[in-house]
Length: 353
Image (cartoon, rainbow, N blue to C red; front, side, top):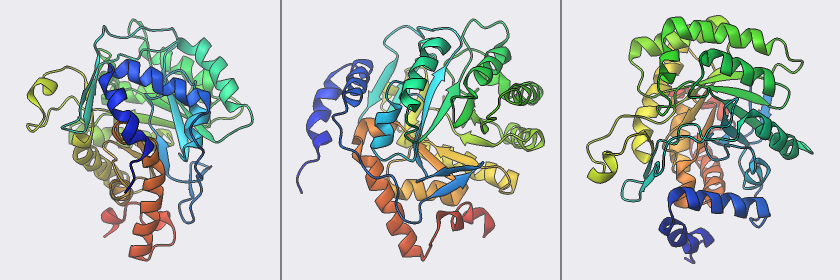
């Protein structure tokens, strides 16, 4: 079998600091050099919250923090792309080095800290990317590290981007902003969702609003989040962000770095939380499954656990953009194997058995 193009350039990228490699990748994407892949595969079309997705495989937030390459990423075959996380004010994030790869573990640890260029620059970039409406683009909003009222930062994000986003995601689960995950506590979570719902009602488009949660939640906390999300009429949950847990098999030097762990070691835990969220909501709350998706089989597992859509990011770092197309073909083959005509037949099937 001949080598894929990414196999040839991966050693070059992995010889660079991870952030330099990422900047180079964004530059190549913006140049338009990557060939376009088709996004529609029979039986993979998915509709949630009133949005029709050509396929259920999306790019997770964090790859394109400033909305400079969303159009290019849609052309690689993604059914949707989520840009951000973006905060009201520009933010440098945490000191470098702050991103660490472990090829042995197929994993990344990052403690970036919501580094981004802020609402103003992001909005300008989004208008350029949306010109011609190339596909479904979500916007992931966050709070500045020095915010006196973090909830107000999220409200400002909803107000600012409701008319630019196909959907919005509120990121309250990054482990790299002190105190951020406290917003997942029951009392704060209820206040957050009520204020965000009121903010969204002020826009003409009123896009679907989702919340991204951590994989490290205690069962009681997850139950409270699901309950409040349903009560307030939120449109779904993104399950999950990176984890602060360190499985014992990780390379020792890698495991001692602070930050959020992503990649294959996150798959089992994030899928378990996804499965629990589907069970607790009794299928009434649309879920996007994220964490350790490395293949079509992984994506299929998340869908059977309750995800209507899946997202990936770290898998791209290790396998390149062809991964998206391979997952789509694998999903179709898995459906044919199981005699499934539409993915909707499979969503949450484990919890319905």
